[in-house]
Amino acid sequence: MKIEKLPSGSYRIKKMYKGITYTVVTDYKPTQKEALQLLAAEMDKIKPTAPAKLDFEAAAEQYISVKANVLSPSTTNGYRGILRNISGNFKKSDNTLKTVYRQQWMKKKEMQKFAAQYITELIDQNP
Image (cartoon, rainbow, N blue to C red; front, side, top):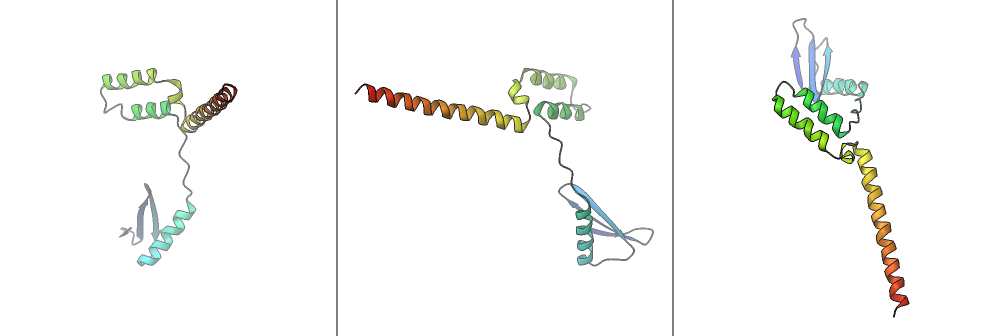
């Protein structure tokens, strides 16, 4: 937390929390305790927005466009080539991937259960 006097005579309290800078301006120099209370009130006012849900492909494209002035053209072309060659399941959003893997896991478990029952029946029929 940083308290600084402005040219106008007011005091600015700044604090960065989880990547967001919170600022409060007062007419008087607050104590540390008052400054914390003022910042807490300011943090309560501002509700953090949930990050947009991006699938892998959109996030990768966003990264490439942000880094376009730093990366060489051959690197960006290489990244885009990799994106074209990645399988469709990997490009889906995280929640969709979890659902797909959960479904695959359940199918596998059902098949294992079915196989165990079938083998048990075969053993029982052929003593």
